Image (cartoon, rainbow, N blue to C red; front, side, top):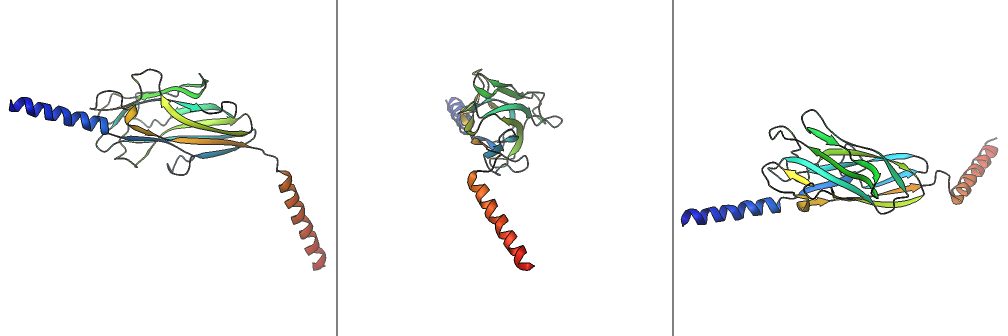
Length: 209
């Protein structure tokens, strides 16, 4: 009876620890600072990049990541590349997914490892982010689009940890970002301001003479 009770308590405790483990998956405009900001501005005809960062729950190591990136407005930007950061030993397999497919900027990106000692990502706890991937965008129209993460279409994919069974995607706090494409030509008000400054500069030069 005691052994059965002990087994039940352990089972409940282990289940709680698995289901309450929370990771963070976020966007940033910087590949050196995960908290640099989540709004990217690109000039018309130009390009820019967003970066994804991951932090893992204390005591866990991420063994697999699989996601897509959805846009609220698909006409504003197109993704031109998506690549996982993959220093030696991190990921056994890493694929950036298909681009501008199924209405997503990135469709079904995934990275996995089977090396429980060295592979994957161990960030040392929540808030200690590790660079996960880079997404390059090209501007296609003026406006703003919001983007967010959502699971790989295969229900077995999302976030996995070594030693924790099942897909932990629902235990992941997922960030959002926005991209604005702005005109490369100054607005009429800007032209007026430039004209005033030029006129003022000319008057100062005349007085100096």
